[in-house]
Image 1 (cartoon, rainbow, N blue to C red):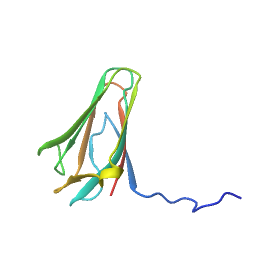
Image 2: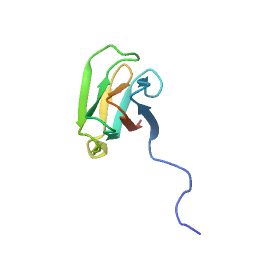
Image 3: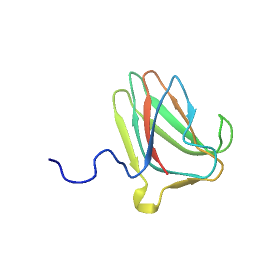
Amino acid sequence: MASGISGTTLFNTAIVPAATPAKVGATGERRLMKLVLFGGTADSQVEFKNAATDTGDVLLTVAALLDTTIEMDFTRVGGLKFSTAMFAKPAGAGAICYVWYD
């Protein structure tokens, strides 16, 4: 039997593919704790906007080359704060962004 708590995570998670940019979590203050961007079959990027829709200020842009993965972890600094909401907009063929947030 494995030790520890089964089936729980420290943060909420979301998967956002390039085909469907989306608001991450509920509207309101959010903190981006970690992200993993898979570059897919083309050079890719993801923008994180301080908004509930594809508007607002871009607070972070991350780029990945073809078939590469970029990981960014903000947990040691308490996360990256979004005061209004968090909107993730990946771009590039096959790009997928995995998001951990609070």
